[in-house]
Length: 297
Image (tube, rainbow, N blue to C red; front, side, top):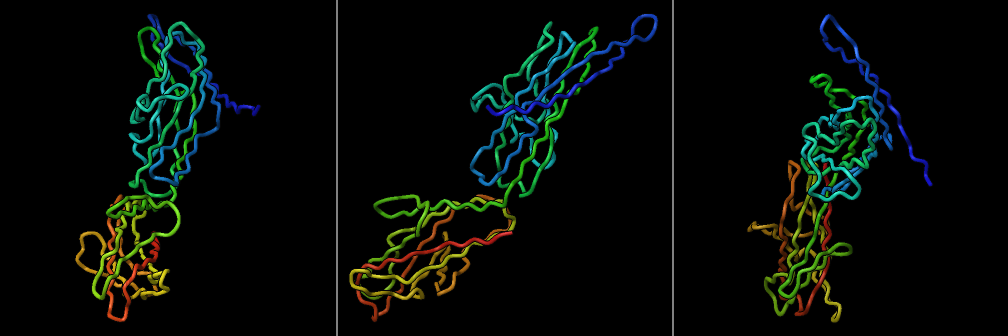
């Protein structure tokens, strides 16, 4: 069994109380232990939620106290860093760490073990790539002679390392089917009965999610081939239409830029393809592949 790392932090808090006839002092001691030295998230997927946890135990001389946890981090809103207690908490039990969160209250009990404190980070393309460092501050509120005091017990480092991310979900749609393309080539096909302009049997739908501030998307294509008749149509006869644009962009042997952005975001776009067939091209069923290339900073 792996030995659990325990970090012990002892805090002696000195609380001064005004009593009749002068100043009196009362000394309270508190002990906190963490099951891990830090919570770290490495973010490489904007559609995934990231979770970590720490087991915490607190011992104090106070007989009436309430433990709390507070997030101290700059750069990421507290409403996307959430806390829940217990093993396997439900999604609805998480609360945002926009302010100090009470985690337990005990009266006449000098020792308490908090079963588990779970931390969840919900990524957003609004978070600029980089490393964010902060801390979870644990402490307790105690009341002595009717007066409330805050006692800080310890801090647990928290880091969120956000990678530059560009993700594309690709769907191929035709009259008969709609399928997601996860790996492999992105195919397009045409029925060419005679010379003229012909649209592809498929349209390609993209959902782009990125945290890059400047980015562009390029598209390359292959020649179109009729494998049964061993005929081909050169790639420069193929055109692409992006979204609702009325402009057709002609393919060549090099990829062409089809889309760009100057800010992070989530974008949906449809790609349609057209084939311009001359009289030198014989009738047939032709197919080829396209490839998407991303560049960003």
